[in-house]
Image 1 (spheres, rainbow, N blue to C red):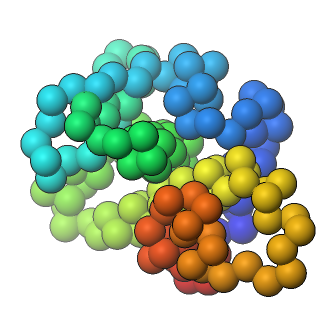
Image 2: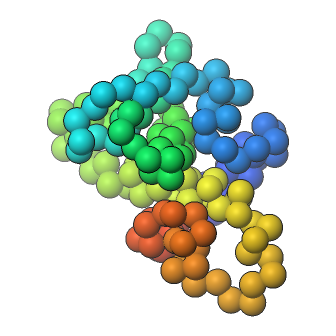
Length: 145
């Protein structure tokens, strides 16, 4: 997972921000909000050399940010890999890809909060969850998993 942290830092250094939707804009990735089933927060699509992140239009601000960061993680870490096709046609375990995208999202979203963390002597998973609105399990997998 150290490689993921380095890739996040490189990306945020290059573009000067850690906001997932601003990064997408600067990278030429189109973010769309569409009416999706409640069970789908978002997904990525590549059509002819153009990449899209599709987000459920019903997501609140925090969930939208987390989902956008997660989907951007798939693009950065896994390129054009279609995990739905992999899962359906190969039996390949996509849990690793999902954990890696979560790890990417956690590191990216925590980049925005680093200033607030600097003065704290010890930071718990609960503190990070409250600060970023990310699920504790996502943070635990990214930093302690």
